[in-house]
Image (cartoon, rainbow, N blue to C red; front, side):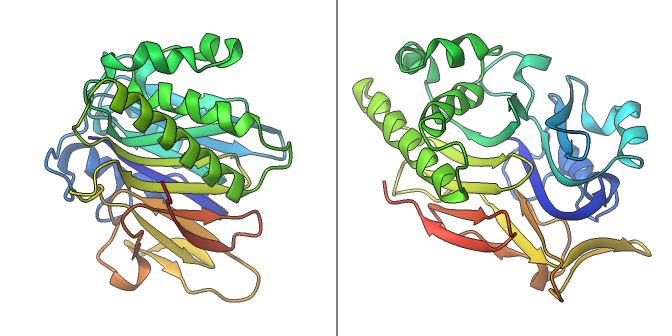
Length: 285
């Protein structure tokens, strides 16, 4: 069911997330610990920002397993960014193809998803009917994830140009309402799992949610401090000091350092603002 990571804060090498931690994203691509299916070898993707060059993110995706991609290994030790997102895929809806690899990119936005919508084919047409021509034509792949991102974008596009993390959270809730309406119309009773992360280089929102009150959402954690470092083989979040701040959202804990990780409560979002302040918000739908 995939694994994801998103980061916003002090500049850090991609290698510090993908390879160096004990439970790195590469380790999770073949031996995930906190989900029933440990193998996530149906492709991967990373996206990152260099805002002094452009507000548009760089994105690198591949259908090859993350553990076996030499290009990623070379890049990771040389790419430094203050905002990035990474994803390793276990395909459910959609072929193993680059267009179905996360993160999905629209303008200066990136989104990754861990979860799925059962019987998505039953609502795919009605979901597309809710999209504007711009978002409809933007779709490239087959996944439920990309279609949900397009639906989310419809609601975000209606917000003011200088939107906040709260506006992003509002758009996630509007997406959920629409999804539940479509599922009910097609008598889909299996829970949809919606662990999703949005970044735009300046703010970040993570959603941990399932449409059923009878089951728990998939795992999602966040970590905050002044900066994230890896020293002498040990990766950890340095406690907050001064004005430096950094925040990370992950499907699985990267390390066994308990104080570094906080569980996002069931059916909640974690909102990270431009000043890197953090707030938890309950999903009220």
